[in-house]
Figure (spheres, rainbow, N blue to C red):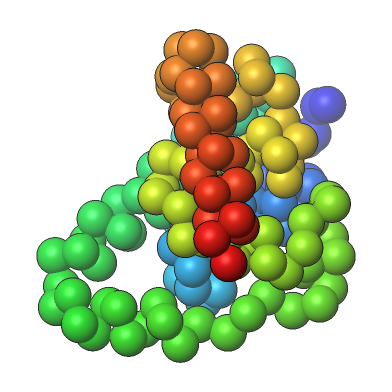
Amino acid sequence: MTHSTPSQLMTVWYEQYRHDLCRYVRTIVKDAYQAEDIIQETFVKAFQHIESLEAVTKPQNWLYRVAHNLAIDFLRRETTKDKTEANMKFSYFPAPSTEEVVSIREASKELVQAVNRLKPSYKSVVTMRKIQGLSLDETSALLSWPKSKVKVTLCRALKKLRSTKESQ
C-alpha cells in the first residue's frame, strides 16, 4: 500500500492496529491508561523509523513486537517501585467492559481474569494464539522465540488455566 506521506501511512496503521494492540498490551500491564500510553509510544517509535518500515510487508508484527517490549519494560520498572503500592494499583483495576469482552473471540469474563493471573510469558502466548488468533509462525516472530518454545509455553499455560478452573 503506497501513501504519499509517512504521516498518512502512520494514520492508516494507527487506525488498523491500535485497538488490537491496546487490548494485547492491556492483558500484560492490566492498566487501561498505561496501555494507551504504551500504544502511543509504540506509534511514536514507528513514526521515528517510518523510512525503514515503509518496505515492511507486515507492519503488524513490528508494532506488536515494539508494544510487547514496551509493556515488559513498564512491568520491570513497576517491580522496582514499592511492591505494596504496585499490588494495590493492580488489584483495584476494573474488569474489562462488556464491549471489550465481546470483542475478544470466544473469551468469557472468567477466562480473561484467569489469563491475567498467568505469568507474563504465558499471558503473551495465550493472548496471541488463542485470543488474537495469530498463527504459530506469527507468534514465534513477534516473541522472537523458536516455534517449539511457543508450543511448549502455550501447552503449559493452557494446563495452568485448566488447573486454575478445576480448583475453583
